[in-house]
Each structure stands twice: as structure tokens, then as C-alpha cells.
Amino acid sequence: MIRRISSGGPFEEKIGYCRAVVAGGFVHVAGTVGAGDTVEAQCRAALDTISKALAEAGASFADAVRVTYYLPDASEFERCWPMLSERFGNNPPAATMIVAGLIDPKYRIEIELTALAPAG
Image 1 (cartoon, rainbow, N blue to C red):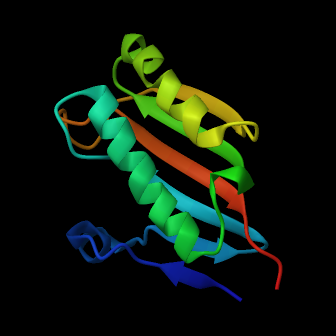
Image 2: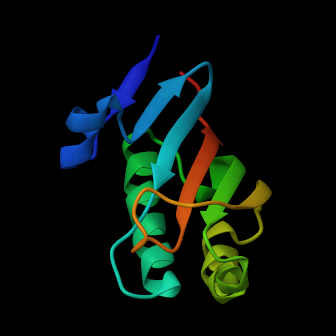
């Protein structure tokens, strides 16, 4: 069974994607950017959006098994570390950080995450 979770954002319909898909025992959360002028504000907003998608799937950051961070400027990543450490706590996932251009130059970070889906 596949379950799709929409955040209701305008780009989901325009581009043809959804915020998360629950399938095969996992919650696959799409690459997520956030609003704000700084990498810290955008990281915090993206984590909040991901948190909502996980909650709707019945999961949380404690269930995360893989996370990928995309940043156009690697030097900004360290400023996000405290927020990431706080969210994942004692349950850190496997992680990768990739330097890449994002869909719009205003974005400083995009986060993609996979978590275990609740049984049942």
C-alpha cells in the first residue's frame, strides 16, 4: 500500500510531487526548503515542514534512518549543526551533505529524509 502526504503547497500540483510517501515500511520525505533570509532560518523552517509530514505519517525524527542535505555553499552547513543535533538527539540517521545548486538562488539548504514508518 502506498500513502501520499501533501503539504498543500502550490508547487506539489505544478511540479507533480507530494511532500511525503509512505511505502515499503518507510516514510520518504521529499527535498524540503524553508522560508527565511538565512541558512539557519531556512533550516529551521524546513525541519518544521518535515516534522509535520512525519507526524502525519505517524513517525518522528527519532524514526529517521537517512538524511541528505543539499547546500549551494558548504561553508554555511556548520551553522545548521546545532538545530540538526537538537532535532535528531540520540537517534541520528545516516547522513550526507552535497554541494549543489538549488531550484532558486534564494534557498540556502534543502533537506531530504527517509524514516521508518510505523508498523501496522
